[in-house]
Length: 417
Image (cartoon, rainbow, N blue to C red; front, side, top):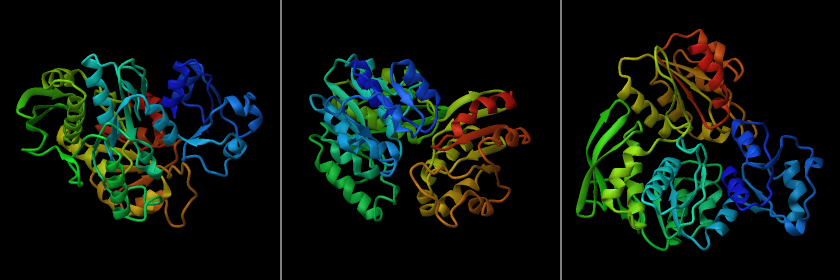
């Protein structure tokens, strides 16, 4: 939503919006010219007429919310539909998948930018290099994340696409994993050119394994970075990626395949990968020293596994404290055992209350129930987290989740220095 707001602001189109709370992101948008409010009182609306106003909403806001009800007369459109309309007139590269969309699309944006193709990009996270999730370019290519939530990606008809993973998720939307995979199949049919993936989905171009369209060999970890040989077609080049986690090498291979489709040479790709500076809230370091503080967006058991695998690879002898805020009651219910399995792998876990977002509580589904299955785990609220962490003595502290747990980072830095 914030990337869309930035797009319209760059076109000198006034933007008004609502969010529940003021954050660093909303403050940045206000500085860029957006008019934002943090109240459900609809009298805060500046009074723009229906005829000259487009209303865009995220499915994360309930249909019964006062602002949704207020704007019904304006014939509001879903965020994904708005993004689909904006892609018209561009050659679109879309990145889909249940995990890794933001990392892959961010790397792709960097590769096309480094090659001088000057893309426009809508990214689901804040790039460390630019401090924004939006890039306005004057080239022919547009890069977007194709979100499977609410079947949003069916609004897109890209020139080419990549699919990272298809793990079961959003089971509040999909009947089961088969329903999810069928929807990915429907998305693939809407792609004009190739769809690159390592998932084995039908009618796609395979990547990630030796002999595929593109893949990596000789992968070596070194203090949070990876060196590897990138293969594409009959060519190969040595390169390096400064992102922890072997899964990000796979994401880089996907980004390379899409970039090459857009006309970037393998030599240019290999030269650009080492200069990618990463994404905020994706294994983002906030402190290094006696105590290391890392923030990450992981909110699914598969993402937690990748995160903890990376930690064990980088800090095999260190004591690890993981502060986790579960995201959505339905996701916690559907993957309860998976969360328990992964959270047991760290030395100690502090669980915050479930971040509800658009949902209502589900009886018996709460962080206390999770903690009861994890030896040594305890619970606390968001406000109490810094003092709870202060009492602990650990080498590595992680702040993990897709909700507002990241708001505690400044206070955590203060107590851990």
